[in-house]
Length: 359
Image 1 (tube, helix red, strand yellow):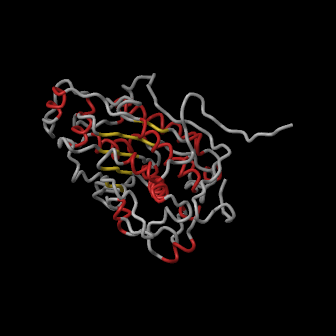
Image 2 (cartoon, helix red, strand yellow):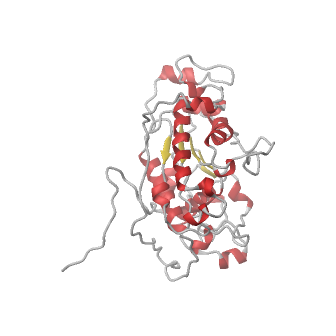
Image 3 (spheres, helix red, strand yellow):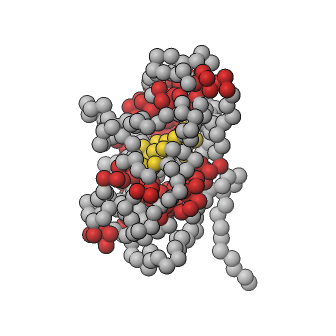
């Protein structure tokens, strides 16, 4: 009897686990002038996976330092280790930079592209619950959607760990400052911003009993639902104004380095889903009259017809209660199936290297 490898195909949606080629990735991201990943360590790993994709290198492509120890020891899945040895990054990694200016092995990334990529912030660390500092927020310098030649901005947001999985605190302190900024409002009005929220992932069950029960899958499900309601209460329609990626099923029981931070296969899969999503997410049709109204948005005024997400009012916990029960959610829900690692021509393979994984 003939045997065939089983292939998991999500019903009704396209959920790839391997990203496009480096040249195609450059083409996709070059739809924008700014590509910003804003979040905690999970988003840092996602940015590393984007670098792996741009370089076409799954062995060392996610390493963003010239430190010889890191480049020798922290390869393959080790690129996503949270150990002090591997968690070293050159300054360009936490800056907005053109990929072709990134130090490398002599091969320029995206030599013909104009976009800048990275983490854009005004504080070095995210606010944690109980701290008095204003926390990290996006530095909007250089973002100018009113300029007819400005192509737009892609913002990928993720958070919650630093606020002890409290959806109210996360949204009010982390998401709302982005939505209420005049430049975000203007970009959204002009149809030049793509906002993606990546929900909380599934941590190992072992951590539930080790002081991290607040991050359990059950609490992560509640957290994700409340964040979605907060977006709706703020006037954003999921699937239209914001795309919400639900990665709980995708990450459940996947290999991780410490029970929370995942290895190369999951992070590359996340990067692939975002890239293919962005490729297929068209800009909305705009009218000249609407554009003229949008150009006049500033911190003190807005066109009367604009929805509430373009105002500067804060959305607080009480807003959640006003959210409708039935939400138009656009989620990608998938399980880790039988995947194979991508092989790069002439490059090292990770398949034979041992991995210390937590399940």
